[in-house]
Each structure stands twice: as structure tokens, then as C-alpha cells.
Image 1: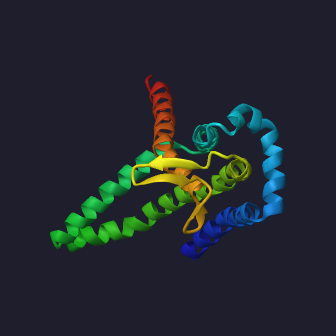
Image 2 (image 1 turned 45 degrees about the vertical axis):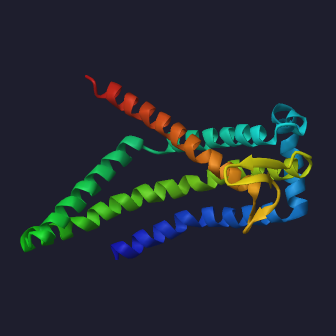
Image 3 (image 1 turned 30 degrees about the vertical axis):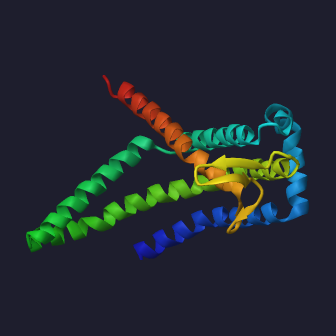
Length: 214
């Protein structure tokens, strides 16, 4: 019964994310909707980050950085990084002890740890559920920005970049499903995301240490 209840909560918390994801895909691939939303965002982003279409890679990086920072800030406010780190440490210790108990053929300890496992998994599920709850908010941040970038790049003549594995790669040509500019954005965002998240985690740990210093 507990598992069913937990599963129901997990499904209900993830529903808004999947609904917004479908809306995002619909907006991104519908020309009229994409143009309307992109033009609306462009009234602000165009003058600030458009650079008269002269530096499209810089535009992608700067606008993407803003989106990543805002979404990371939302996660920082809504998530307890310290508690998450504690849970991860507990799970790591549990898995290590369980693995060792199996190797030692310690039936008593194995059964004892197996009884403890549902409680630990429930805690992990609560953490995952809290992450899913903020995903719709981050999607609401990314959808307008991506639509503007799409429309912006469609209007620039500087389509080509050089990468280590190819010369004169078009930003708007598609690789598999997505245009190359989205792949470039993902490539640029990976290290930046790690840096921003690490900075927010350091802030959380500093606040926690200051709070428990006395």
C-alpha cells in the first residue's frame, strides 16, 4: 500500500512536467507559435544580446547563461542541497555495507539492511519528487528563450562556425533531430551548469555551517 501511494504521488508530481514538455515541443516546432513567442521575447533580448546578428555564438552563450543561472537559482531556493548530500552519503554507505555483507555471506546483516532499504528508498524518492516539482518552472524559463534564439538565428547571415571535427558547420542545419545551435548550446551549457550548481552548493554549505557554528 505504501509503495502504491508513493507511486501515485510521484506520478502526480511529474504530470505538470510532462504536460509542459509536450507544450514546449509543440511551440518549438510550430512556426506560428514559435515566431509569436520569439518576437515577444525579442523585444527585450534583441537589443541586449542580439549584437546586430554579428556574434551568434556569443548570443547563444550569453542568453543560455542567463537561462541557466535563473533555473539554478530556482533550484537553489526550492531544494535543500545539504539534505540531498546527506542522503547521497547515507545511500553510498548503505550500498557499500550491503555489498560487503553479501560478499561475506552475512545473512543476518543482509536481512537487516534489506529491511532498512525501503526507508532509504522513500527518502530518495522524496528528493526526486522535489526535483520534479521544480522542472515545470525551469521549462517555463527555457521555452521563451529557446523560441527567441530559434527565430534570432533564422534571421542572421552568420550561420557557420568551425569546430575541432569539422569546418564551416551551419548553426541552423539539423543533426538528427535538432539544429546544430541547440547542440552547441548543450555543449556550452555542460561546464557552465556544473560551475553554477557548485557555486550554489557552496553557498548552501556555508549557510549551514554558519547556522550550526554555535
